[in-house]
Length: 349
Image (cartoon, rainbow, N blue to C red; front, side, top):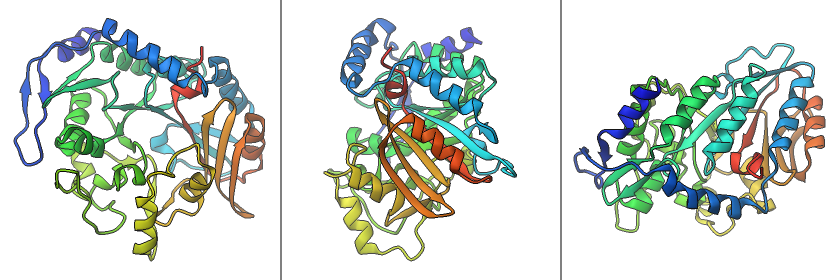
């Protein structure tokens, strides 16, 4: 299997073109592991203030395993798994910067037969780089994918199609489609994606590229005047069965409130309590499918949001012990997702 992966990686790489142009191929040398050493050094430095140790991740998983009435499932099963008499939980790993720790997480989960879900960011430096209109995947990418496969992890893409349009002036839909098809060629059957970034960052949510998922009709443009490709990509054509934020268009969405929320780029971010409360519990554009979300945002710092029999709840910068207590308090039938980033959850060594 590894020989097949390396062969596919070392051959033709994808040429991306501006919107409206034909896609093609170009030959290029993959970025090597040695070239990534400086990148990973910067990741460690940049995330040091917020990174937990890997022992913290192990403790989190061990605590979840010891809870009664808990069923841990891959994200693709979160909304469909039988929750009768149980609380269903999915472990979503958004691999923004650290595939090495992601692989370490998947191997720890494999010890206990737990299938975590890992979403590789196709615009991250560890994944590949753009050279003009040519996109070159890194050489180590094959090994990380193989490791996730061996660990029994669910693999998906951290969808950043809009980032490709906005930051590279290229066809983000073609890029996303091409990467999903490339994974399929490797024998990895991607069933879902999870949107990268939030609506205020790009002016639209990345999940809005999928047909039927646009939150409301509007024309969002890049700096050079091209319209972002919203509501255009048929997920079924790529074998996708879910989008992992499980966002649902707000009933009776107020256009003025929605535009105001999406235009406030300066406030958007996990470090802003007021914005996170607005995003997770009082979002003017969409509701979320899971009953509860647990976001790890720093060193033993969690954001909790969702609904229980008492109504909506939001808790800011609580610790892991309280997270476990909150899960115990949730009623049977609850569906929850842990939103984890390897560079934060265990990237600190």
